[in-house]
Amino acid sequence: MDKYFDLVNKFDLKGTPEGIAPLGAGHINDSFRVKTKEADAPDYLLQRINHAIFKDVELLQNNIQHVTNHIRKKLRAKGETDIERKTLTIIPTKSGKLFHFDGENYWRLYLFISGGKGYDSISPELANEAGKAFGEFQGYLADIPEKIEETIPNFHNMEFRLEEFREALKNDKAGRVAANQGIIKEIESRAEEMCKANRLNREGKLPKRINHCDTKVNNVLFGEDGKILCVVDLDTVMPGFVLSDFGDFIRTGANTGDEDDADLNKVGVNLAIFEAYTRGYLETAKSFLLPIEIENLPFGARLLTYMQTVRFFTDYLNGDTYYKIHSPEHNLQRTKAQLKLLQSLELNEGKMAAIVKECTTGRK
Image (cartoon, rainbow, N blue to C red):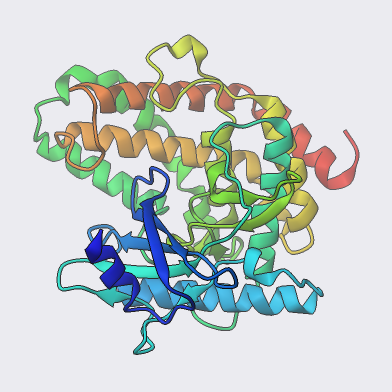
């Protein structure tokens, strides 16, 4: 652990580090809690930034600094006093940089948010609070003056994901195209509709806003009272469509099965979770959203589920080079499970639209 103490001491922290231990099981960045000796000194969160995914670390850290500074201003204007627990706080290095490069890896340090709790499982109550949190988050950033850049280019760009898919079809690197014509037809039959958001944006009808782009329930910290503390994991905060942020929560949180469920009979949309999240989200986001954004929220759920279907299947066709797999057919299993969820969302489109309408107008 000596190397971690050396790393932490590169940063401008208060107090003396006395213990460093791994924290959580993140899939992207390695995280460690840093405990300090003095009673009046805060603890810290040390993270190794995954440079293979986030290739421009300076851009990444500048984005997060702009976002958290702007949220801090909004919180002060609201009269919040517990600001250090309501947004992330980057600790700079002793030389004033927002990260440290040790010659091999990039590292950053945050204040540790005490008393915060995350959840991996979902309930209607948590979904409602998460909806409020992500709606509020987008609202805070609606007027951010600094330019926020893409940390992963084309991350939620459906047209780009279809280009990747068609390139994989053409190359057929793993020799899997012939055996999967049914899935290919399912994808292509929806392709034109699923590029609707891109077309509406080019027509000037659908704006891009600053989004979180990873809206899972475990990216919201809750206090001991079950209420929102803050939104965390800001690496993917960048411009996009609110439909994507809304849709990704429904894809991950309102699925009655697992993302890679082998039993497709278990997979479908949980309308109670959909309604709870929608109600919470519109409570905090309705004031700044355009009518076209609100009416297309159910489409957003289909869009992100379709996008993930395409991404899993593209990786399968390419020979499983991007996602970690636990068996040779894991990406195909994921593809089929996401496709089943998409079909369930399509069947329930009318019910979801009615929920959105009631949450917006109060009328069924």
